[in-house]
Length: 265
Image (cartoon, rainbow, N blue to C red; front, side, top):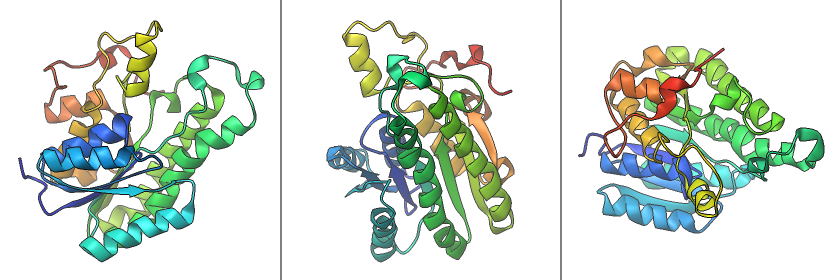
């Protein structure tokens, strides 16, 4: 239960969804987790981290604001003096679930979809890199999507996720000789708070075989515990691929239906 005790992680967008699932799985392994995001929900996640045996710190932070992001990393410097893991999960969805084509949606959607998520991942990785270099090691996980390679919801969404994967690949190239590992994870369909709320309102969604919010987090912990994780640097992996590599399952003991989804190309 304490395999990651003493390690320090930042999880952006940790108040909800996949980010929250990652924070709680890191807590199960005993890590210190800084939970950042725009909403006061980060406090709830930090409390749950504590309840699970980790140490949770809530930081209200807009990941579209570089100064606030810099302050987050400076806080970690002051309080911990190290950074081992960064999970880039912050994301802003202006409404892609509505299914409208890009020419019928406001141009502002492009900025909303790419600012906190794509650009936010770049900025956080920028701040994390120097700290991980100083520590001689580190793991950066970018929560990406099948949308990086396949159409999903909106043109700008796919553009943003493809850019996240390119960040993973190119930053890994520059950090390859410094024992800092970067990977992207592609979840399948996740039972987030938003998805479950839509389902309750009657939306027809593929919940059968969907992933829990914790499934990606289990992959993150497996990566963090792998002494040979650096061989995976620069690459995207579906959450299912990580489950197959590391032999873990979802909360109910199952594997999601990601095996039926084209993985790349």
